Length: 184
Image (cartoon, rainbow, N blue to C red):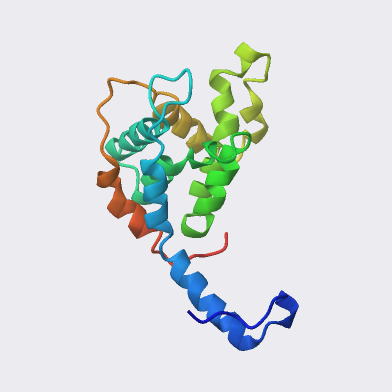
C-alpha cells in the first residue's frame, strides 16, 4: 500500500495529503458499520443494573421507535450511551460528538445534555443537585430533552421489556451515517 513521504506533518506534500484524505473519507464512510460492531460488544451488565448496556440502548431506541420518533432520533437514542465505555465521566458529550456531523442541532443538543438531565432521577440520593437541568430552562430543546429522559432513557432498565434487535436498527444506523457530514 502506498504511504506518505513524510515523518513530520510539516513536510507533507499536496499528494501526501490527497492520499490521506482519500483514505480518511473511505474510513469515515464505514462509521456506521463500526458503531454496529461496537454496540454488539455492549452485552455485559454494568455492575448493579438488571440489564446490559446494549439492552438499555435497545430498550431506549425501541421506545423511541414505538413513539414514532424520526430515524435520526431513533439512531441517536440507540447510541446515546456509547460514551459509557470510554468516557464514563462525560459520556453524553462523547456520544454527541460522534453524532454531531450526521444529525440536527436539536438531536445533538439532546444527546449532549441528557446526562445532566438524567441527574433529576438520582442526584439527590447521592448528595447532588437533581435540578441541574434547570440551568437550561427556556432553551428551545429543554422540553425535548426532559421528554427524551422521561420517556425513553430513564425507564429502559427492565429485564422483561421486549426490545427490537440491533439488526432491526442497523439499516437506520447505516442510513444516518451515510449522510454527508456537516458542521453544526
